[in-house]
Length: 128
Image 1 (cartoon, one colour):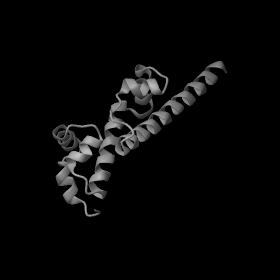
Image 2: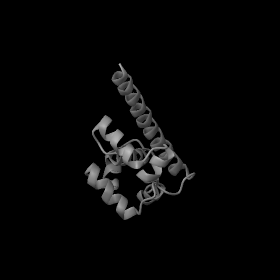
Image 3: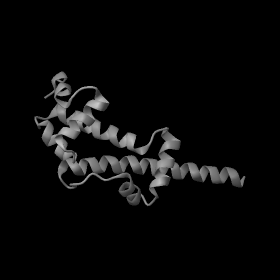
Image 4: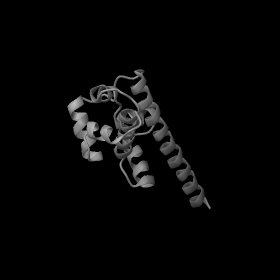
């Protein structure tokens, strides 16, 4: 009985930390876009805000989602960038700076994961 209770408690904690991690990422990206934040947080800073060690955060996210937390961080950055490229007239450099990237590094990062440069991606979109 004690083992079942311990497992249930662990699963609840994993769920809480996971949900809080994704909420924090979303809020942080919104804060970057709005200018309320000027610096991209790293995993160490994120884990501190969640009151867990970065090792524990990595362990939990990997256990639950089978991916490193950075995977989801990059995914959310890319989704935000794609949204901005599709719905605004902001330049790629402006979007890169909003997301705290050097524009040339941002273009390389974007192409590595999306397979297109930001400009090529924008040209495939017709919503703006």
